[in-house]
Length: 327
Image 1 (cartoon, one colour):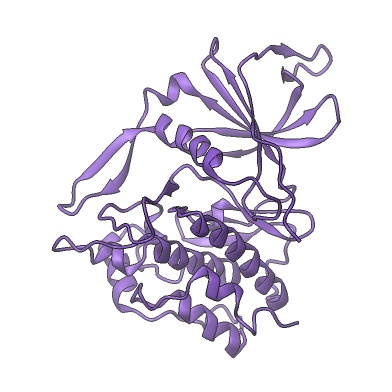
Image 2: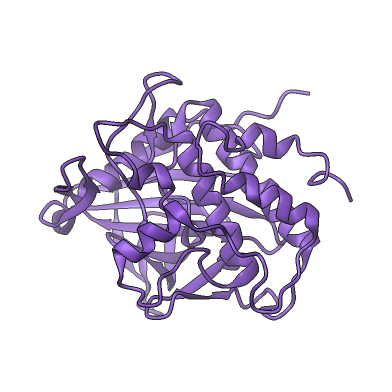
C-alpha cells in the first residue's frame, strides 16, 4: 500500500500579530503562542495552539533582522582556517530542504506544516508538529555528562526501547539519504521524543542535497564531539562522503542515550587535540557506568563506529538488521 501523501507545506505572507486580552500571549494569525520549550543558536521554540482547531504545535521563531547581522563559523577547511557565514543562511536552508523533501507520512523527520513570513517585523515563524516530551537528552557542557529526558528512566537500561529508538532514527536517516540529502548534524539535541515513546529527527539547518550519490567534501560540519575519524584525517586533499558521517553521529547519539556520556571524551573536555586522538585511535568502551548491554547490541553499535567509512553500516542495513527487528 502506498503511503498517504500530505498537502504541500503552506506558505503565508499575510501575517497579522495581535495580543490576547486575557493572557497577553502573542497571536500570529490563528496561532496563540504559549510557553518556551526550546532555544537554538538562531531561534526560539514555543508551544502554540491553533485557535481554530485547539491543536498543539511547536513554532520556531526566527528574527531575520538579527540573523542577518550574526556570523557563525561552521567549518574547518583543509588548511585549518574557519569559514564563516551568516546565521540566516542556516535558517533559510532548513526551509529550502523541507521544500525539497517529498511530503509523505511516517518518514521520521519532524513535520513542518506552515511557514509564516512577517516581512514588516522581519520575523519568520515555522509551524512544526509538537514532540510532546521534547529533546531526548540534555548535556552538561562542562562535564560531557548527559541526562535522559525526564519521561525516561535515567537509571535503567531498557534495550527494547533503545532498539525502537535506533529503528526510528534509522528510518529518518534512510528517508533523507534515499532523497540524496545528508543531515550533517545528527546528535541527541536534534532527536525529539513523542508521548508514544517514538522519536524523530529535527533541525535540518545544516542539511544539504547532494548533486549525486558519489559527491565528496572537504569541509566539516556539526558538533566536534560527534565528528567521525574521516573529518580529522581529511589531510592531503583527502575528500569524504557525508552519508557515513551521519551514521557515525547516529552511533554517538545512541551511545549517549544508553551510557549518558560521550564515547570519546578527553580528561579535560576542552582538549580538542586529545578528543581528536581518541576518535581516530581509541576503541569504544561498552562497559561503563555499570550498564550491561547485550552482545547483539554491542555487535550492532560497533558497526556504527567502524573507522573506515566505506565499511561502516548504512541506514538501509540498520533497518534490515534481523536482531534489531526481532521482538
